[in-house]
Image (cartoon, rainbow over all chains, first blue to last red; front, side, top):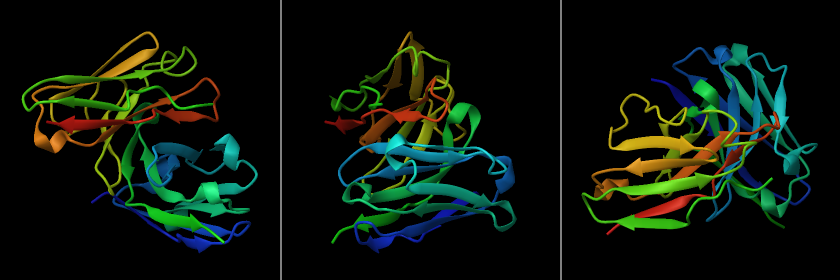
Length: 118
Length: 111
């Protein structure tokens, strides 16, 4: 079964850090681009970042550039998102997703919740 | 850059058809046949229902169909069923290689 499982969410102080992980199974992880998407409470989906197959190309939403870092370890079938300098507006459920044909995200994890509060 | 424009809500009765629009620009929706659509139930992860404007992934009902004209993409759901009540989002790459955009989202209510 193709599956993505996120972990690492939790409470953080403004200015704090968290590291999200996404464990992939059921497919050859190193063959696909991967993406992080977030959803603030009661709000819509927001694309956050993506990474190419070997980790050499990374793209970010402007509001997270310089604060968040996407990475992957193909040997461990894992995707990561390092969240630094967190702000209240980063509070959201964070989903990892596998990119398929023409940028469509065809597999999603269940999400992990990040709450930034003092 | 802001989200693609979708109606906040649409509604329809069982058996009817509804269409959700997704309006962007020539730098995103109009850029290529790359628009995808996602269905999301409250508290659940999104699910891909349309990719490359018109294609359905395996297992998605043929009651869901997509189209595009210029800078506006559309999702049509025919033969509405109670289980279709959910939020729907469009998604598109943009000419700025580092940016992807979701639509604002549309809440579908089955009356």
